[in-house]
Image 1: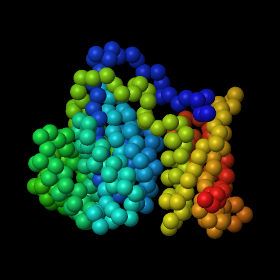
Image 2: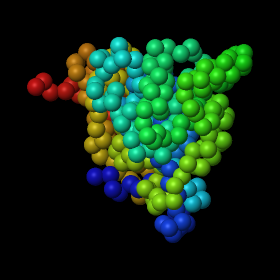
Image 3: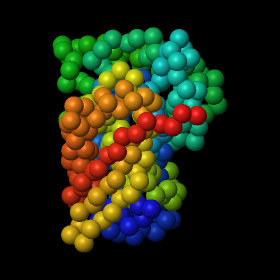
Image 4: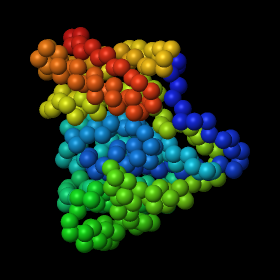
Length: 307
């Protein structure tokens, strides 16, 4: 039970629900467009695993930003892959990005501006354009051309923006860098303008719909993606066994990681357990930043029982 650890970002002032405004925004893009980095920037904390590898995001995650009378709820979704690639992924991974549009007040389309558009991007843009034309109502679209710090010469951004805006009706195009925060404040303001008068979905101090245990899992999964390669990050299961807060404020997290084979277990442990120790140190440092108090992470690696 992780209920003994409640992470709050200060007690927010009370606001009459009749004066509250809320916007639910679905964020769509292909793998590695930078959606998770953007999500974490908006939430002002780590809520979604970040990694240069594809499909780090495995589930819908909601980041929450409450400012003044307005609450933004950003729904991060797994990356959209091309139709040819879809058969290699779980059905839920390919379906949920599109499901997230239902009930959204707006949609944010994130494109990696530093690379050319591939089949997956073209198919995503064409599908969005088709739905815009066919549906009676479709959420307003905002386009974020992301990773602009990596684009040279800069006129390439205008060419890309014109190409996409010829196909999609976008309310606004933003030029962003989720890592450095360039262009993010203007984007947030535009999304906040889509808020409708209705009660907030979350208390003002909440930054994510993830439980404490799920946030721990996101951080550890990210560190596994960074440190290990090939199939290992995708096949690992994990579970927070125990989270204990001591009198001095420090938190000890006991965590189990499950792999498919003894060989994978040896890889994660490393020679003399050094790789596992490095993973524990990585996770402890990141979780200390996320929680705002000292964290020690103890990770046990086991082979999944054979069915």
